[in-house]
Amino acid sequence: MTLWTDGGGKGPATSLHPVHGRDQVAALFMSVAATLTPGAVDLRYRRVAGDPCALVFSGDGPLAVVVVDLTPEGDRIAAVYSVTNPDKLTGIR
Image (cartoon, rainbow, N blue to C red):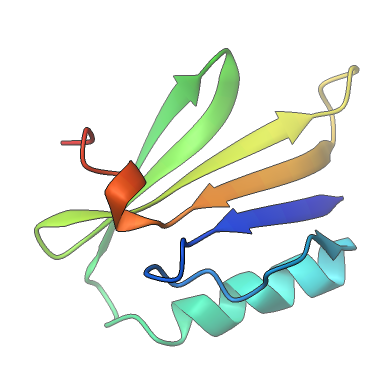
């Protein structure tokens, strides 16, 4: 599994390079989650370009779009794409 993040220097993306391995990806998501106020996050599940994704809201606006790319069999996660750049999230309501 590989995680790509895009914070544009403005969002909570914590890696400038892809993160490889499920343990490393989980650790990165946990480090970001630790900075959020408990109970202040709202998840809404959707599909983007046919792929499952989560829209993450914090407060009154979007915090992230997290797209999950599954293996061809559809039973495992192959890659995760996380966009937290606020300039790229302006169209999400």
